[in-house]
Length: 487
Image 1 (cartoon, rainbow, N blue to C red):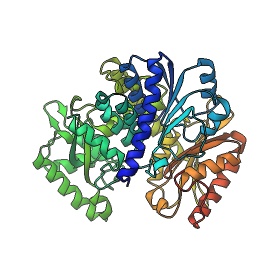
Image 2 (cartoon, rainbow, N blue to C red; image 1 turned 135 degrees about the horizontal axis):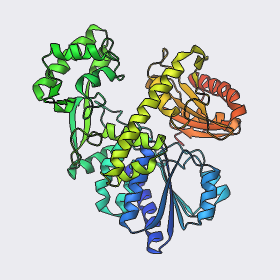
Image 3 (cartoon, one colour; image 1 turned 90 degrees about the vertical axis):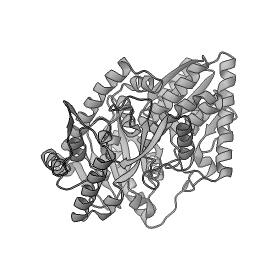
Image 4 (tube, rainbow, N blue to C red; image 1 turned 90 degrees about the horizontal axis):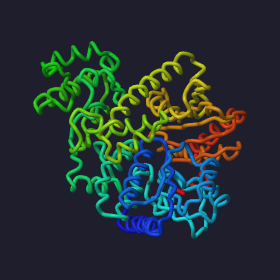
Protein backbone atom coordinates (compact mmCIF):
# COMPACT_ATOMS: atom_id res chain seq x y z
CA UNK A 1 0.00 0.00 0.00
CA UNK A 2 1.13 3.57 -0.70
CA UNK A 3 3.43 5.25 1.83
CA UNK A 4 3.43 8.93 2.76
CA UNK A 5 6.16 9.83 0.25
CA UNK A 6 4.25 8.25 -2.63
CA UNK A 7 1.05 9.98 -1.56
CA UNK A 8 2.83 13.33 -1.31
CA UNK A 9 4.22 12.96 -4.84
CA UNK A 10 0.81 12.02 -6.18
CA UNK A 11 -0.85 15.00 -4.47
CA UNK A 12 1.84 17.29 -5.89
CA UNK A 13 0.92 16.08 -9.37
CA UNK A 14 -2.76 16.77 -8.60
CA UNK A 15 -1.81 20.32 -7.56
CA UNK A 16 0.04 20.80 -10.87
CA UNK A 17 -2.99 19.65 -12.85
CA UNK A 18 -5.28 21.92 -10.82
CA UNK A 19 -2.98 24.86 -11.53
CA UNK A 20 -3.17 24.26 -15.29
CA UNK A 21 -6.98 24.05 -15.12
CA UNK A 22 -7.23 27.19 -12.98
CA UNK A 23 -4.96 29.17 -15.31
CA UNK A 24 -7.13 28.21 -18.27
CA UNK A 25 -10.31 29.28 -16.46
CA UNK A 26 -8.77 32.59 -15.39
CA UNK A 27 -7.91 33.27 -19.04
CA UNK A 28 -11.51 32.44 -20.02
CA UNK A 29 -10.26 29.49 -22.05
CA UNK A 30 -12.56 26.73 -23.30
CA UNK A 31 -12.03 23.30 -21.71
CA UNK A 32 -12.90 20.10 -23.57
CA UNK A 33 -13.48 17.16 -21.18
CA UNK A 34 -13.75 13.50 -22.14
CA UNK A 35 -14.42 10.57 -19.81
CA UNK A 36 -14.98 6.83 -19.93
CA UNK A 37 -18.49 5.36 -20.02
CA UNK A 38 -18.43 2.99 -17.01
CA UNK A 39 -19.54 3.90 -13.47
CA UNK A 40 -16.10 5.23 -12.56
CA UNK A 41 -15.88 7.25 -15.75
CA UNK A 42 -19.35 8.78 -15.31
CA UNK A 43 -18.50 9.58 -11.67
CA UNK A 44 -15.24 11.21 -12.80
CA UNK A 45 -17.16 13.24 -15.38
CA UNK A 46 -19.57 14.33 -12.64
CA UNK A 47 -16.71 15.40 -10.36
CA UNK A 48 -14.87 17.44 -12.99
CA UNK A 49 -18.16 18.93 -14.24
CA UNK A 50 -19.16 20.15 -10.78
CA UNK A 51 -15.70 21.53 -10.09
CA UNK A 52 -15.61 23.45 -13.40
CA UNK A 53 -19.21 24.62 -12.95
CA UNK A 54 -18.28 26.11 -9.59
CA UNK A 55 -15.41 27.97 -11.27
CA UNK A 56 -17.85 29.37 -13.85
CA UNK A 57 -15.65 27.81 -16.51
CA UNK A 58 -16.47 27.45 -20.18
CA UNK A 59 -16.42 23.70 -20.74
CA UNK A 60 -18.05 20.70 -22.37
CA UNK A 61 -18.07 17.10 -21.12
CA UNK A 62 -18.47 14.05 -23.34
CA UNK A 63 -18.44 10.39 -22.35
CA UNK A 64 -16.76 7.97 -24.75
CA UNK A 65 -15.85 4.28 -24.89
CA UNK A 66 -12.12 4.85 -25.46
CA UNK A 67 -9.57 7.38 -26.67
CA UNK A 68 -9.30 7.12 -30.45
CA UNK A 69 -9.20 9.18 -33.61
CA UNK A 70 -12.77 10.42 -32.94
CA UNK A 71 -11.57 12.21 -29.84
CA UNK A 72 -8.57 13.53 -31.75
CA UNK A 73 -10.94 14.86 -34.46
CA UNK A 74 -13.13 16.48 -31.80
CA UNK A 75 -10.12 18.19 -30.25
CA UNK A 76 -8.93 19.50 -33.61
CA UNK A 77 -12.43 20.76 -34.49
CA UNK A 78 -13.16 22.34 -31.07
CA UNK A 79 -9.80 24.13 -30.75
CA UNK A 80 -9.97 24.09 -26.93
CA UNK A 81 -7.43 25.88 -24.76
CA UNK A 82 -7.28 22.77 -22.57
CA UNK A 83 -8.35 19.13 -22.82
CA UNK A 84 -9.09 17.07 -19.69
CA UNK A 85 -9.30 13.28 -19.94
CA UNK A 86 -10.71 11.43 -16.92
CA UNK A 87 -10.61 7.66 -16.27
CA UNK A 88 -8.72 7.06 -19.49
CA UNK A 89 -5.84 8.58 -21.43
CA UNK A 90 -2.72 7.02 -19.92
CA UNK A 91 -2.77 4.28 -22.53
CA UNK A 92 -3.04 6.76 -25.39
CA UNK A 93 -0.40 9.39 -24.69
CA UNK A 94 1.54 8.47 -27.83
CA UNK A 95 -1.60 8.81 -29.99
CA UNK A 96 -2.26 12.25 -28.53
CA UNK A 97 1.36 13.31 -28.91
CA UNK A 98 1.40 12.19 -32.55
CA UNK A 99 -1.79 14.06 -33.44
CA UNK A 100 -2.29 17.05 -31.09
CA UNK A 101 1.12 17.72 -29.52
CA UNK A 102 0.54 21.47 -29.22
CA UNK A 103 -2.71 21.18 -27.25
CA UNK A 104 -2.56 21.44 -23.48
CA UNK A 105 -3.86 18.16 -22.06
CA UNK A 106 -4.51 17.03 -18.49
CA UNK A 107 -4.84 13.25 -18.04
CA UNK A 108 -6.51 12.08 -14.80
CA UNK A 109 -6.31 8.31 -14.98
CA UNK A 110 -5.55 5.18 -12.95
CA UNK A 111 -4.94 2.62 -15.69
CA UNK A 112 -1.51 1.22 -16.55
CA UNK A 113 0.70 3.64 -18.45
CA UNK A 114 1.80 2.19 -21.79
CA UNK A 115 4.22 4.89 -22.95
CA UNK A 116 6.01 7.86 -21.43
CA UNK A 117 5.81 10.97 -23.59
CA UNK A 118 8.07 13.99 -23.12
CA UNK A 119 5.73 16.91 -23.82
CA UNK A 120 5.48 19.99 -21.60
CA UNK A 121 1.90 20.53 -22.77
CA UNK A 122 0.81 17.27 -21.15
CA UNK A 123 0.21 16.93 -17.41
CA UNK A 124 -0.61 13.46 -16.15
CA UNK A 125 -1.91 12.45 -12.73
CA UNK A 126 -1.70 8.69 -12.44
CA UNK A 127 -0.99 6.65 -9.28
CA UNK A 128 1.17 4.16 -11.20
CA UNK A 129 3.78 6.88 -11.73
CA UNK A 130 4.41 6.83 -7.98
CA UNK A 131 4.20 3.10 -7.33
CA UNK A 132 0.56 3.28 -6.18
CA UNK A 133 -1.75 0.52 -7.40
CA UNK A 134 -4.41 2.05 -9.62
CA UNK A 135 -6.45 -1.15 -9.63
CA UNK A 136 -7.08 -1.20 -5.87
CA UNK A 137 -6.00 2.07 -4.21
CA UNK A 138 -7.67 4.78 -6.28
CA UNK A 139 -10.03 4.97 -9.26
CA UNK A 140 -10.36 7.48 -12.08
CA UNK A 141 -13.00 9.45 -10.21
CA UNK A 142 -10.74 9.36 -7.16
CA UNK A 143 -7.85 10.85 -9.12
CA UNK A 144 -10.25 13.50 -10.45
CA UNK A 145 -11.48 14.18 -6.91
CA UNK A 146 -7.99 15.02 -5.66
CA UNK A 147 -7.59 17.52 -8.50
CA UNK A 148 -11.03 19.00 -7.77
CA UNK A 149 -10.11 19.31 -4.10
CA UNK A 150 -6.88 21.08 -5.10
CA UNK A 151 -8.96 23.50 -7.18
CA UNK A 152 -11.20 24.38 -4.21
CA UNK A 153 -11.49 22.73 -0.81
CA UNK A 154 -15.29 22.99 -0.91
CA UNK A 155 -15.19 20.24 -3.54
CA UNK A 156 -14.74 17.86 -0.62
CA UNK A 157 -18.49 17.37 -0.95
CA UNK A 158 -17.69 15.36 -4.12
CA UNK A 159 -15.90 12.69 -2.06
CA UNK A 160 -18.98 10.41 -2.00
CA UNK A 161 -19.13 10.47 -5.81
CA UNK A 162 -15.47 9.42 -5.98
CA UNK A 163 -16.20 6.51 -3.62
CA UNK A 164 -19.13 5.49 -5.80
CA UNK A 165 -16.73 5.40 -8.77
CA UNK A 166 -14.23 3.30 -6.81
CA UNK A 167 -16.96 0.81 -5.91
CA UNK A 168 -17.96 0.70 -9.56
CA UNK A 169 -14.41 -0.49 -10.23
CA UNK A 170 -14.73 -2.95 -7.31
CA UNK A 171 -11.88 -1.38 -5.33
CA UNK A 172 -13.25 -2.42 -1.93
CA UNK A 173 -10.59 -5.13 -1.93
CA UNK A 174 -9.34 -4.88 1.64
CA UNK A 175 -10.43 -6.51 4.90
CA UNK A 176 -14.23 -6.77 5.15
CA UNK A 177 -14.63 -4.96 1.83
CA UNK A 178 -12.92 -1.82 3.03
CA UNK A 179 -10.92 0.77 1.09
CA UNK A 180 -7.15 1.20 1.14
CA UNK A 181 -4.56 3.68 -0.05
CA UNK A 182 -5.81 6.93 -1.55
CA UNK A 183 -9.41 5.67 -1.44
CA UNK A 184 -9.10 5.54 2.34
CA UNK A 185 -8.18 9.25 2.35
CA UNK A 186 -11.26 10.03 0.26
CA UNK A 187 -13.41 8.04 2.68
CA UNK A 188 -11.94 9.96 5.62
CA UNK A 189 -12.88 13.22 3.87
CA UNK A 190 -16.42 11.99 3.30
CA UNK A 191 -16.88 10.73 6.88
CA UNK A 192 -15.42 13.89 8.45
CA UNK A 193 -17.80 16.00 6.34
CA UNK A 194 -20.75 13.87 7.57
CA UNK A 195 -21.52 12.77 4.02
CA UNK A 196 -20.87 9.04 4.33
CA UNK A 197 -21.41 6.56 7.15
CA UNK A 198 -19.69 3.18 7.18
CA UNK A 199 -22.06 0.44 8.34
CA UNK A 200 -21.00 -3.13 9.12
CA UNK A 201 -23.74 -5.30 7.70
CA UNK A 202 -24.53 -8.04 5.19
CA UNK A 203 -22.93 -7.01 1.92
CA UNK A 204 -25.63 -8.33 -0.39
CA UNK A 205 -26.46 -6.03 -3.26
CA UNK A 206 -29.75 -4.15 -2.92
CA UNK A 207 -29.71 -3.54 0.83
CA UNK A 208 -31.58 -0.23 0.40
CA UNK A 209 -33.98 -0.91 -2.46
CA UNK A 210 -34.75 -4.61 -2.83
CA UNK A 211 -37.22 -6.59 -0.71
CA UNK A 212 -35.28 -8.86 1.66
CA UNK A 213 -36.44 -12.09 0.03
CA UNK A 214 -35.47 -10.77 -3.41
CA UNK A 215 -32.06 -9.69 -2.13
CA UNK A 216 -31.41 -13.25 -0.96
CA UNK A 217 -32.79 -14.90 -4.09
CA UNK A 218 -30.82 -12.66 -6.50
CA UNK A 219 -27.45 -12.81 -4.77
CA UNK A 220 -24.61 -14.21 -6.85
CA UNK A 221 -21.78 -12.93 -4.66
CA UNK A 222 -21.95 -15.15 -2.73
CA UNK A 223 -24.00 -17.71 -4.62
CA UNK A 224 -26.05 -19.64 -2.05
CA UNK A 225 -27.34 -23.00 -3.29
CA UNK A 226 -31.01 -23.40 -2.44
CA UNK A 227 -31.57 -19.64 -2.04
CA UNK A 228 -29.95 -17.94 -5.06
CA UNK A 229 -32.48 -18.04 -7.87
CA UNK A 230 -35.13 -19.49 -5.56
CA UNK A 231 -37.44 -16.68 -4.43
CA UNK A 232 -40.02 -19.02 -2.88
CA UNK A 233 -37.33 -20.75 -0.81
CA UNK A 234 -35.96 -17.37 0.29
CA UNK A 235 -39.44 -16.47 1.52
CA UNK A 236 -39.67 -19.77 3.43
CA UNK A 237 -36.20 -19.18 4.93
CA UNK A 238 -37.19 -15.74 6.23
CA UNK A 239 -40.49 -17.02 7.57
CA UNK A 240 -38.63 -19.69 9.56
CA UNK A 241 -36.68 -16.89 11.24
CA UNK A 242 -39.85 -14.94 12.07
CA UNK A 243 -38.66 -11.99 9.95
CA UNK A 244 -41.53 -9.97 8.47
CA UNK A 245 -40.97 -9.12 4.82
CA UNK A 246 -43.43 -6.23 4.89
CA UNK A 247 -44.07 -3.16 6.98
CA UNK A 248 -47.68 -2.32 6.23
CA UNK A 249 -47.99 -2.40 2.44
CA UNK A 250 -44.30 -1.77 1.80
CA UNK A 251 -41.72 -4.54 1.39
CA UNK A 252 -38.82 -4.21 3.83
CA UNK A 253 -35.20 -4.11 2.71
CA UNK A 254 -32.11 -5.26 4.61
CA UNK A 255 -31.55 -1.69 5.80
CA UNK A 256 -34.98 -1.78 7.50
CA UNK A 257 -34.09 -4.68 9.82
CA UNK A 258 -33.37 -3.90 13.46
CA UNK A 259 -30.20 -5.18 15.13
CA UNK A 260 -31.87 -8.27 16.62
CA UNK A 261 -33.28 -9.28 13.24
CA UNK A 262 -29.94 -8.69 11.52
CA UNK A 263 -28.11 -10.90 14.01
CA UNK A 264 -30.73 -13.62 13.63
CA UNK A 265 -30.49 -13.48 9.82
CA UNK A 266 -26.66 -13.41 9.81
CA UNK A 267 -26.43 -16.36 12.18
CA UNK A 268 -28.94 -18.43 10.21
CA UNK A 269 -27.25 -17.65 6.88
CA UNK A 270 -23.84 -18.59 8.31
CA UNK A 271 -25.17 -21.92 9.64
CA UNK A 272 -26.92 -22.63 6.34
CA UNK A 273 -23.87 -21.81 4.21
CA UNK A 274 -21.56 -23.89 6.43
CA UNK A 275 -23.93 -26.81 5.97
CA UNK A 276 -23.41 -26.38 2.22
CA UNK A 277 -19.62 -26.32 2.60
CA UNK A 278 -19.29 -22.59 1.85
CA UNK A 279 -16.68 -21.90 4.54
CA UNK A 280 -14.79 -19.11 2.74
CA UNK A 281 -18.01 -17.39 1.65
CA UNK A 282 -19.24 -17.24 5.26
CA UNK A 283 -16.26 -15.09 6.24
CA UNK A 284 -17.33 -12.58 3.57
CA UNK A 285 -20.97 -12.31 4.64
CA UNK A 286 -20.39 -9.24 6.79
CA UNK A 287 -18.50 -6.24 5.53
CA UNK A 288 -18.44 -2.47 5.11
CA UNK A 289 -21.40 -0.79 3.48
CA UNK A 290 -21.14 2.87 2.52
CA UNK A 291 -24.27 4.87 3.26
CA UNK A 292 -24.69 8.34 1.72
CA UNK A 293 -26.45 9.93 4.65
CA UNK A 294 -27.95 12.90 2.77
CA UNK A 295 -29.75 10.67 0.27
CA UNK A 296 -33.28 9.42 0.83
CA UNK A 297 -33.52 6.00 2.55
CA UNK A 298 -34.66 3.08 0.37
CA UNK A 299 -33.39 4.71 -2.82
CA UNK A 300 -30.59 3.60 -5.17
CA UNK A 301 -28.45 6.60 -4.18
CA UNK A 302 -28.45 5.82 -0.47
CA UNK A 303 -26.13 2.81 -0.82
CA UNK A 304 -22.90 3.59 -2.67
CA UNK A 305 -22.76 0.19 -4.40
CA UNK A 306 -26.28 0.61 -5.79
CA UNK A 307 -25.42 4.19 -6.82
CA UNK A 308 -22.47 2.84 -8.84
CA UNK A 309 -24.70 0.39 -10.73
CA UNK A 310 -27.10 3.23 -11.56
CA UNK A 311 -24.23 5.29 -13.00
CA UNK A 312 -22.92 2.30 -14.92
CA UNK A 313 -26.33 1.76 -16.50
CA UNK A 314 -26.54 5.36 -17.75
CA UNK A 315 -23.13 5.09 -19.40
CA UNK A 316 -23.68 1.65 -20.91
CA UNK A 317 -27.16 2.55 -22.17
CA UNK A 318 -25.98 5.70 -23.99
CA UNK A 319 -27.43 8.13 -21.43
CA UNK A 320 -24.34 9.25 -19.48
CA UNK A 321 -25.64 12.79 -19.23
CA UNK A 322 -28.23 11.55 -16.74
CA UNK A 323 -25.51 10.01 -14.56
CA UNK A 324 -23.42 13.19 -14.68
CA UNK A 325 -26.46 15.28 -13.71
CA UNK A 326 -27.11 13.00 -10.72
CA UNK A 327 -23.46 13.29 -9.61
CA UNK A 328 -23.82 17.07 -9.82
CA UNK A 329 -26.91 17.01 -7.58
CA UNK A 330 -29.99 16.57 -9.79
CA UNK A 331 -32.58 14.62 -7.79
CA UNK A 332 -35.53 15.37 -10.06
CA UNK A 333 -36.14 14.37 -13.66
CA UNK A 334 -32.65 12.96 -14.22
CA UNK A 335 -32.95 10.57 -11.28
CA UNK A 336 -36.42 9.44 -12.29
CA UNK A 337 -35.33 8.69 -15.85
CA UNK A 338 -32.15 6.97 -14.64
CA UNK A 339 -34.18 4.53 -12.56
CA UNK A 340 -36.03 3.56 -15.73
CA UNK A 341 -32.74 3.18 -17.61
CA UNK A 342 -31.45 0.94 -14.81
CA UNK A 343 -34.38 -1.46 -15.22
CA UNK A 344 -33.77 -1.70 -18.97
CA UNK A 345 -30.07 -2.26 -18.31
CA UNK A 346 -30.78 -5.17 -15.95
CA UNK A 347 -33.16 -6.74 -18.46
CA UNK A 348 -30.49 -6.49 -21.18
CA UNK A 349 -27.85 -8.11 -18.96
CA UNK A 350 -30.14 -11.04 -18.17
CA UNK A 351 -31.01 -11.38 -21.86
CA UNK A 352 -27.34 -11.44 -22.89
CA UNK A 353 -26.33 -13.92 -20.17
CA UNK A 354 -29.15 -16.26 -21.17
CA UNK A 355 -28.16 -15.97 -24.84
CA UNK A 356 -24.52 -16.85 -24.10
CA UNK A 357 -25.50 -19.93 -22.10
CA UNK A 358 -28.00 -21.16 -24.71
CA UNK A 359 -25.29 -22.73 -26.89
CA UNK A 360 -22.02 -24.31 -25.66
CA UNK A 361 -20.01 -22.84 -28.55
CA UNK A 362 -20.67 -19.30 -27.30
CA UNK A 363 -18.41 -19.99 -24.30
CA UNK A 364 -15.20 -21.71 -25.41
CA UNK A 365 -12.40 -22.98 -23.22
CA UNK A 366 -8.90 -22.68 -24.70
CA UNK A 367 -5.61 -23.75 -23.16
CA UNK A 368 -5.21 -20.70 -20.92
CA UNK A 369 -8.38 -18.62 -21.29
CA UNK A 370 -12.14 -18.77 -21.74
CA UNK A 371 -13.65 -16.93 -24.71
CA UNK A 372 -17.17 -15.53 -25.20
CA UNK A 373 -18.25 -14.43 -28.68
CA UNK A 374 -21.08 -11.92 -28.31
CA UNK A 375 -21.30 -11.59 -32.11
CA UNK A 376 -23.54 -8.70 -33.09
CA UNK A 377 -26.15 -9.71 -30.51
CA UNK A 378 -24.52 -8.43 -27.31
CA UNK A 379 -24.18 -4.64 -27.12
CA UNK A 380 -20.46 -3.87 -27.18
CA UNK A 381 -20.97 -1.31 -24.42
CA UNK A 382 -22.36 -4.01 -22.12
CA UNK A 383 -19.89 -6.79 -22.99
CA UNK A 384 -17.71 -5.65 -20.07
CA UNK A 385 -20.56 -6.15 -17.60
CA UNK A 386 -21.29 -9.59 -19.06
CA UNK A 387 -17.64 -10.63 -18.69
CA UNK A 388 -17.49 -9.30 -15.11
CA UNK A 389 -20.49 -11.42 -14.12
CA UNK A 390 -19.42 -14.55 -15.98
CA UNK A 391 -15.83 -14.68 -14.73
CA UNK A 392 -17.04 -15.34 -11.18
CA UNK A 393 -18.77 -18.56 -12.23
CA UNK A 394 -16.18 -20.19 -14.47
CA UNK A 395 -15.17 -23.80 -13.69
CA UNK A 396 -11.46 -22.90 -13.59
CA UNK A 397 -10.87 -19.71 -11.58
CA UNK A 398 -7.25 -19.55 -12.76
CA UNK A 399 -8.21 -18.90 -16.37
CA UNK A 400 -9.13 -15.35 -17.46
CA UNK A 401 -12.23 -14.65 -19.54
CA UNK A 402 -12.05 -12.72 -22.80
CA UNK A 403 -15.41 -11.62 -24.22
CA UNK A 404 -15.99 -9.67 -27.41
CA UNK A 405 -18.80 -8.20 -29.50
CA UNK A 406 -19.08 -6.36 -32.79
CA UNK A 407 -18.96 -2.57 -32.60
CA UNK A 408 -22.18 -1.17 -34.04
CA UNK A 409 -21.65 0.46 -37.43
CA UNK A 410 -17.93 -0.30 -37.58
CA UNK A 411 -15.74 -3.09 -38.91
CA UNK A 412 -14.31 -3.60 -35.43
CA UNK A 413 -14.68 -5.71 -32.31
CA UNK A 414 -14.79 -4.52 -28.68
CA UNK A 415 -12.97 -6.88 -26.32
CA UNK A 416 -13.37 -7.02 -22.56
CA UNK A 417 -11.21 -9.25 -20.36
CA UNK A 418 -11.64 -10.13 -16.69
CA UNK A 419 -9.86 -12.46 -14.31
CA UNK A 420 -9.74 -13.42 -10.63
CA UNK A 421 -7.42 -12.83 -7.70
CA UNK A 422 -6.33 -16.47 -8.04
CA UNK A 423 -5.05 -15.81 -11.57
CA UNK A 424 -3.29 -12.61 -10.48
CA UNK A 425 -1.38 -14.59 -7.87
CA UNK A 426 -0.09 -16.80 -10.68
CA UNK A 427 1.22 -13.81 -12.64
CA UNK A 428 -1.62 -12.86 -14.99
CA UNK A 429 -1.69 -9.20 -16.04
CA UNK A 430 -4.53 -8.56 -18.48
CA UNK A 431 -3.53 -4.93 -19.05
CA UNK A 432 -0.34 -6.11 -20.70
CA UNK A 433 -2.05 -8.98 -22.55
CA UNK A 434 -4.65 -6.65 -24.07
CA UNK A 435 -2.04 -4.06 -25.04
CA UNK A 436 0.41 -6.47 -26.65
CA UNK A 437 -2.20 -8.62 -28.42
CA UNK A 438 -4.07 -5.61 -29.81
CA UNK A 439 -0.89 -3.88 -31.02
CA UNK A 440 0.10 -7.07 -32.85
CA UNK A 441 -3.27 -7.20 -34.60
CA UNK A 442 -3.81 -3.58 -35.68
CA UNK A 443 -5.74 -2.43 -32.62
CA UNK A 444 -5.36 -0.71 -29.27
CA UNK A 445 -5.80 -1.91 -25.72
CA UNK A 446 -4.75 -1.86 -22.09
CA UNK A 447 -6.15 -1.44 -18.59
CA UNK A 448 -5.56 -3.09 -15.22
CA UNK A 449 -4.05 -6.43 -14.32
CA UNK A 450 -7.46 -7.79 -13.28
CA UNK A 451 -9.64 -6.06 -15.91
CA UNK A 452 -8.69 -4.68 -19.31
CA UNK A 453 -10.06 -4.07 -22.79
CA UNK A 454 -9.12 -3.73 -26.42
CA UNK A 455 -10.44 -3.01 -29.88
CA UNK A 456 -9.26 -4.71 -33.08
CA UNK A 457 -10.52 -4.97 -36.67
CA UNK A 458 -13.16 -7.66 -37.21
CA UNK A 459 -10.90 -9.78 -39.42
CA UNK A 460 -8.24 -9.91 -36.68
CA UNK A 461 -10.31 -11.24 -33.79
CA UNK A 462 -9.41 -14.94 -34.10
CA UNK A 463 -5.72 -14.08 -34.39
CA UNK A 464 -6.11 -11.79 -31.38
CA UNK A 465 -7.67 -14.59 -29.32
CA UNK A 466 -4.84 -16.99 -30.23
CA UNK A 467 -2.23 -14.39 -29.26
CA UNK A 468 -4.01 -13.57 -25.98
CA UNK A 469 -4.14 -17.27 -25.10
CA UNK A 470 -0.41 -17.58 -25.80
CA UNK A 471 0.46 -14.47 -23.78
CA UNK A 472 -1.52 -15.62 -20.74
CA UNK A 473 0.25 -18.97 -21.00
CA UNK A 474 3.61 -17.25 -21.00
CA UNK A 475 2.63 -15.19 -17.95
CA UNK A 476 1.57 -18.35 -16.13
CA UNK A 477 5.05 -19.73 -16.85
CA UNK A 478 6.59 -16.70 -15.18
CA UNK A 479 7.68 -14.72 -18.24
CA UNK A 480 7.85 -10.97 -17.63
CA UNK A 481 6.65 -8.61 -20.34
CA UNK A 482 7.52 -4.99 -20.97
CA UNK A 483 5.52 -2.65 -18.67
CA UNK A 484 5.12 -5.22 -15.89
CA UNK A 485 6.53 -2.62 -13.47
CA UNK A 486 3.07 -0.99 -13.27
CA UNK A 487 3.94 1.25 -16.19
